[in-house]
Each structure stands twice: as C-alpha cells, then as structure tokens.
Length: 362
Length: 277
Ligand SMILES: Nc1ncnc2c1ncn2[C@@H]1O[C@H](COP(=O)(O)OP(=O)(O)OP(=O)(O)O)[C@@H](O)[C@H]1O
Ligand SMILES: [Mg+2]
Image (cartoon, rainbow over all chains, first blue to last red; front, side):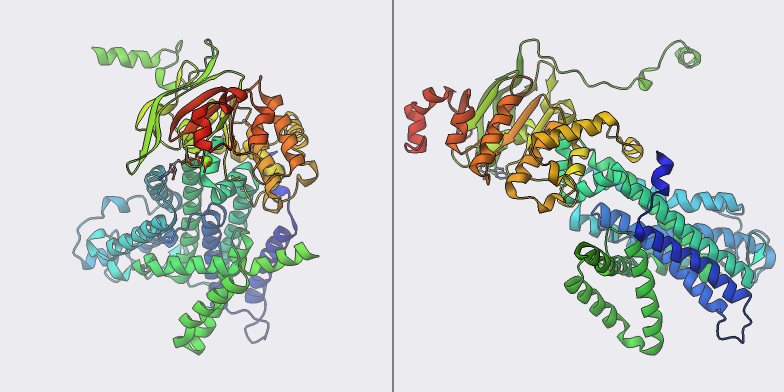
C-alpha cells in the first residue's frame, strides 16, 4: 500500500521527474564530456548556478507544502534554509583544518581572529559528515517543532502567524550577526576547501553536488507528493479551507499543522545544506526577512498547491533575476513586483494553473 | 529507599506502567436514558446575554426541534455543546459521565457529537467523496492519516451514505460545484460518516426545494431512534412535518416546550412570534 502510492504517478509527475532526470544526466555530460570550445559545452559556472536554483526549488516545495496545502503563510521559511546551510557550513569549516590563514588545526580563522582559545561546545562533532547531515535536519526541525508547538497550540494563524515568522527570522539574523554567537558574525562562514576530502574547486565535485541537488529535489518532491496524496494531505486541505469545521469532525488541527510544518522545515534545511557548498558561503543575510518573502513570491508565481509549480516558479524567477540584475540591475525589483501583480491578477493559480485550466477545458 | 523501589519497579516485566497505559476517554453512559443535560447555562457577549439560565434535557433517541426568533441563541447553544464557546456558568453533560465543558472540539466530536452548521461548510476544494472520507470515524493521528488506506468496509459505508444523501453521481465532483441544497446534504452526509450518537442540525433545509425538504425530513425521521437528533429550523412547515417535541427558545432561555400543537397554542409563544406560529 505504502509503496504503491509512491509509484503511482500522474502526467505532471512524469513530466516533472522526467525533466529532472534529463537535466541530471544531460548537464553533467555537456559539462564533462563536451570540450569547452564547443557551443554545446555547459560551463561549470552554469552548472553551479542551476544547482543553486535547484536547491531554491526544493525550498519552494517545502514552502508550498505549508502555504499551498495547509494555508500557513510562513514568512520565515528561509530561516530553516539558512540553519541547514549553517550546519553544512560548520562541517565545511572544520574540513579546512590547518589550511586556514592562521593555520590553527582546530579553530576556524574567525575564531583565531577573535582570540578564542578553544572550540565552543556547539562546534563539536561537526568534523564528522554524518553528524553535520543529522544536524542539517535536526536543528531546523527542532526549531520548527518548538515554534509550531507554541504557535499552533495557542491557535495563532493568519496575519499574526506571518508576522511572528518574520520576527523569528529577523531575530535569528540579528543573533547570527553577532560575533559572540560563534558563527562568524556578519562575514558568516566561507573560504571552504573541500567536502568529504574532495576539493570544492574541482569540476567533478561540483557535478556531484549538482547531481545531489537533482536527487534531493526529486526525493523531496516524491515524499511531499506522497504526503499531499495521503489522507493526511486531504486533511491539510480541509484545514486550509475550513479549519474550525475540521475540528468539529475530530481533527487535531494543531498536531497536523505541527508535523507538516516541521517536515517542511527539515526539507528547507536539506535545501540549505546543498546550497552552501555550491555558492561557497553562508552568512546572516540568508536570514533576511526579504528572502522569505521572495520565496513566497516564487510559489505564488509558480502556482500554489501543486508542488511542481513551486519548483518552476523558483527556477523561473531566479533565472529572470540573474538576467535582469546583470542587464538592468535597477529595475529588477520592479520587474519582480510587476510579475507578482500580473500573476495574481491574471493567473491566480500561477503558471501551474495554465495547465490545469487547459485540462479542465479539454 | 523509595528510589531503589521505584527503580526496581522499572525492571518488572509483569506489569504495565501507568504512563504507558493509554488514557481512554470515559465511555458514553446512557444508563438513565438521558443523552444530554444542560443546566443553568449562561453566556454573555460583551454584556449581552445570548444564553440566559438555559436548561435543556434530551432523551436518547429522540428527535427534538428547536425553534425561536432570530438571535434567540439557538446556534450559540450548539456552539456551547460542541465546545466552540465556553459558557460563563452552568453544566453540560453528555450522558452521565462526560463533562463537555472539560473537553475541546475534537474530543467532543470523537465522543459522538456531530454538527451541521447553519451556514453549510464543506471542504470546497475536495471532492464529495473525499469530504465523506475525511469525516468517517477513524484513527486521526498524524501517522495513521499518512499511511491510511481505504478498506472495503469503509468504501461501502461511504457509498451507502452517498446513496442516502442522493449524491452518487456527484461523488467525484468538487464540493464547490454543488448547489446550496446539495451542500446541505453533503454536510448531513459528513455527519452520518462520523456515526455520532447525537446530531445537532442547524437549519438543514435553508435553500432547499420542496422535494429536497421532504427527503430531508424523511432522512431525519429515519435517523431518530438509533441516534438523538436536534434540529434547529425556522421553516414551520418543515418543523411540523418532523416534530415530536418542540422547544421554543427566546432571549437565551426556554420559553415553552411540548408537543407542536401545545407549543403553537401557548400564548407566550404566540406573542413572541406575533401570531406567525
Ligand atoms: N461570538 C459572538 N460574539 C458576539 N455576539 C454573539 C456571538 N455569537 C452569538 N452572538 C450573539 O448572540 C445572539 C444569539 O445568536 P445565535 O446565533 O445563537 O442566534 P440564533 O438563535 O441562532 O439566531 P438565527 O435564527 O438568526 O440563527 C445574537 O444576538 C448574536 O449576535
Ligand atoms: Mg443560528
């Protein structure tokens, strides 16, 4: 029973997963096997750019799960992404070992710079990859659980919830800016050397990270889809549409919200962990409330409550962003705003809505 | 010493620790044949007494109609029974043992009280079938819901209810596409899926055609006996067609109670309704 629902696919799933598979195979081939002179060559820069956007797509799916299906407008979801990123960043820092500028075998450069004598306790264990991976999921998960427990139990919802999620990510940003916190202050964590012993500068490492992002996105999509197709997913939609009605049927709304929110945060953490080795830095700017708002715009543009729509929105908006910010940097924000307004007015179900509209007509 | 003892307790395998025993909700106890007691219940909203020293007793299996002018407190009474609103004073018991004032909405629903709202609220973006699927009695733990699959018996139950509420053909239509009357029925169907002991039905025939009304009347009458049914309704013809006992609410308390003819001839009721009854 459990597996059959995983295997069951509809057209949209096949398209989405098919395209992902294609990207996952073709891009590495075009990068590694096609000579750089050739027009078909896909540069490592572009591989990494796409890899980074794929982690955004995973983050967007996580956000869609709570906003699209449960109606929780979290405006702090990038915080979980950033926490996952920091956990990975800490591992990468410890991988540097004594190759830092100051050559300290144990302490990362910024700690030596701050005259710290020993490694803070919360940096213990991050020299082990498995431990870092665990923390990538546990830290955002636990934070989301505690936050969700308090918020959902006292039935905070709607605008109030959105505001406190903004406050959460803002508070984290301020905290991570402080040097005393032990996360590198406003410079964050950077100057990584290698991951699992492989140099981050190598094309092959970058390709592996890229493929890992493709796989993570596909898995994240499959698990999320499994959730939304289950009866739990139906209950989520029921809560979104008529929360108090579902209580009178006997649903423990706060528990359902809590677990889906927590899962979503874990997914966001994984996305962040894949993002950091590809971009080579994580700093408190990732906690910026604006990031979380942009994330919601991706989902709105792609189309809520479809999962694949969120991923498409993330890719589309970010490619437009990279285009506009190189060509006409000053108009990017206006373009984003215009895009958002146009989509809300003419495509209330986002880009994914076009397909569903056609399907309903045809 | 006591610590050693309690440590010792932990090693024993022949008994189950208290904290491992799942707390069972006390069962509904109908030994006095009474299913609902409301006594001395009052509730004010900003000083306005919506419910004022209300007493209401329901026998198991009866079909009770509650009438009263707008704002009499009928819906508020249902809010109190289902845990949506906490009264300022008074007692509300379900059977002999369940104190409803100590329970929250999901717990009350699980205990066997189902409710149809005045304004029909169905899950608009789910299909009729899915609306019923969510409403059936089942384990509603998060994990159980995630891994749930439909059993043959559950499917049969849903199909039976679809037949009862006359929505077989619409089973895979989105609930938002239904007419107002059909939504009312779907909500009644959702109520039936919960297999409740006590059904609270707030204005079930608003927006229905005469035919639909007749079917609803039939349905409610057939439910009484096995279930206890409370119907709030403004449509007097409808009330007359199903009524056994009628309770008239006015300004938050019971104005009159009895057989339909009795109540209709009660001068106080006539005064409130200005002869409309
Ligand atoms: N949550 C609330 N806050 C403030 N006032 C309320 C609230 N709920 C109900 N009331 C008031 O309590 C009174 C009783 O309302 P209620 O909805 O119970 O009446 P009703 O008998 O169901 O009327 P109707 O026939 O119109 O449905 C009304 O005056 C209403 O305005
Ligand atoms: Mg009412």
